[in-house]
Image (cartoon, rainbow, N blue to C red; front, top):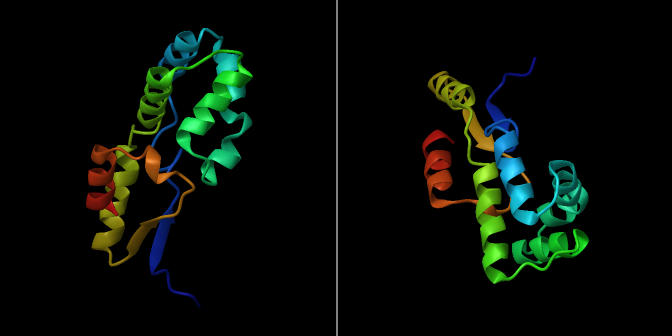
Length: 130
């Protein structure tokens, strides 16, 4: 019989909640497209992005796909918004990690989330809870 020693959490949609409809609609409006068009373009090359594509390159490709021209400021804004997309931590999961550690279990994160997408406040939360 195997004894449980650790619990590994995924980051997106587990530790943090997915982007809100408002966040997505505001980002889509900023890009001059519909939410459906935004989501299609956003997820189109996501696997490559999550495997290490540079964030600026990802957003420039996104712009080209939607037939827009993003200057450096717009690329930076989209990068900032993306960080915001993945910054809403689920308090139930964070509380559970406390319970698990008090019970003697180790907790960790396994994710394809890029380090470039992590803000300093996110790092603080992750250090405290994991």
